[in-house]
Structures are given as structure tokens and as C-alpha cells.
Image 1 (cartoon, rainbow, N blue to C red):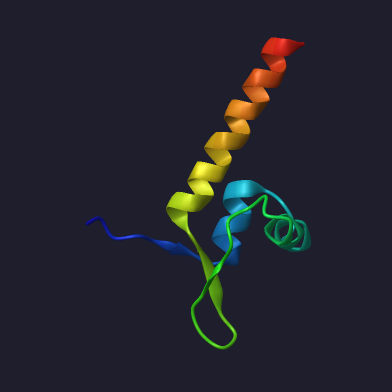
Image 2 (tube, rainbow, N blue to C red):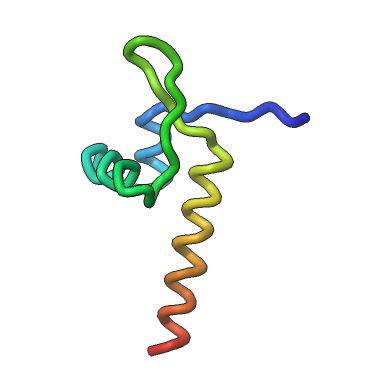
Length: 68
């Protein structure tokens, strides 16, 4: 099994370019992967889930362009 990388907020922000509060709102609404609790005050996101979210957004964007 391949090792799964956990991304902390600065890396997630670099990948998605959204502010922290917007990402947390997306999580709350089920539109972004939930973070994994790493400790009492630490959490992170699975890299594979963040990349899958980005790929889905790209695919949805491309489909919208095809419709227009």
C-alpha cells in the first residue's frame, strides 16, 4: 500500500487557492473533503482527496465550457 500524505493548511491553501474560512464552509456543506484530526489542535487533509477534489472541479469546469 502506498503511503498517504497528510497536507496541513498551508499546503492545502497552495493547492486550492481558497481562504481557510471558505474551505471550512465547503467542508461543512459536504463540498470539500473533511480534514483528518491529527491531535487536539491539529488536523490535515489527505493529499489524494484534495487532488481528487481539484480534478473534479476541473472536469466540471470543462463540462460547463462545452455547454456554453
